[in-house]
Length: 495
Image 1: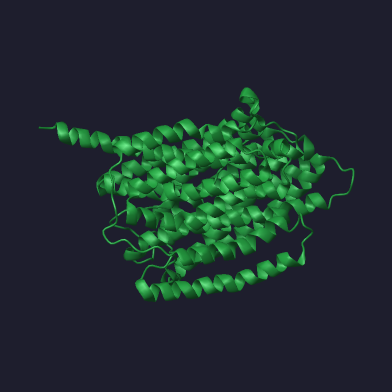
Image 2: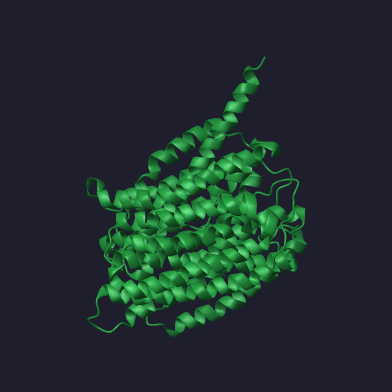
């Protein structure tokens, strides 16, 4: 009598393990790549702009495809699109590992980001349909643990795989390691994940997606390539023309909303003041993360000459601080103090950046890993106070019927901010490297560039702090837990 229910219960927990593993693979892939960037640059003789695209191309493709990926799951089935995504992600990982020149690696990373945009949105949807509301708190708690594990293990795994130089492959195993995981996930997913679709699915907005992609590329490509090309006129023209293209995107989205009610972006959400400000917070915070984690690893490995393993282990205090502060903020602080916790997080993170500036100036090229621990712990604690409760705070005054669209837009905005931050590394970091006097030691040059980039972070965090005044003062309780993308992908906490 109890065999069938027991088997069904076992199936859904196996399905949960599969989708968690896919999310873990996606998160680890980002942090692994960041720590291996200097090794990739040396081996492929890649320019610094190409290196920016290795990380930024993934983020941009992921961001642009994220909402459409969710819609595809609603229309054609979450299981089907998840399997398509994890299969594509696995193939793209193999192509990344086999890439023989920077342009091929950039192209395959873009493909990897696009397939992740098919896979990742299905994860929370599958959980939502597989578990009743009273069990989701426990499930999301497990998900938070997986995210924390990915944040800590990604840089260490990337550092070890790069340092070990398995079979003389240097950095390539950081991508090839996805092959067995992806294959097993696809095979088990086909067997154990149940199919589900939205009762009333929206239509695809491919025109809106194309306009958004074109406008963003016209803005980000010149920012990334402009420094290397000597900031030519075409770059400024392209950035200027991106404004009317994005304005056309907005007009089309309004038309699409009137026509069939299924725009890529629900513009009516921006009439909610707290949501509009929250999107600004997500974008600016994404820029902050995009800048910091790339310049940090370049500073440690190319400037100070540290090995990938030493750079990876240096980030452990940061990851632990993020995880600890995130759990405390959601469970204890935000219910009592509301948005003040998030604002305190911005100030604490800025304090950590200022501490880092002071130490980098005082110790110069003689700085040790243990001396970086204090500013990294302070920065990590500040980030933890922000990342976990931010989505719920931004959604606090959004009408319940638009919560799903708003959640997807929040995650997309954070990824766009990350891509923009990676593009701005040309301005915040490499302009200082280029302008250094001939004959200066690399450590001194990269140290000055790192400090210059950190001042940009201080300014960005001040903007984040001010925008947070528009968020609801206290958290808004909800009967149904909102599908929060922060559980599926936090801002990359380490190198």
